[in-house]
Image (cartoon, rainbow, N blue to C red; front, top):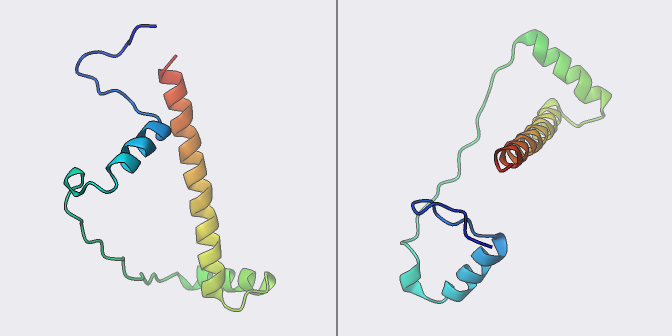
Length: 100
């Protein structure tokens, strides 16, 4: 079957092809860029309106969490996981739609 990509368009590699390239170049220092230093973000403090804070505290007690901060951390993590899954699904749907 003929290659349908245009000349200026880079060829998309599968995960397996990428893995093979990385493994082949793993010990070749000239194949890698200089390492970059990444700093971990510091914790963020947010303030909640009193009514929202009391509602959160109520549900933290209802769910038998030791404190409202732990309950909020759990709720935020669940919501972020949900949003990431929805975003990934949307990206996959758009990619599938654009490739047909």
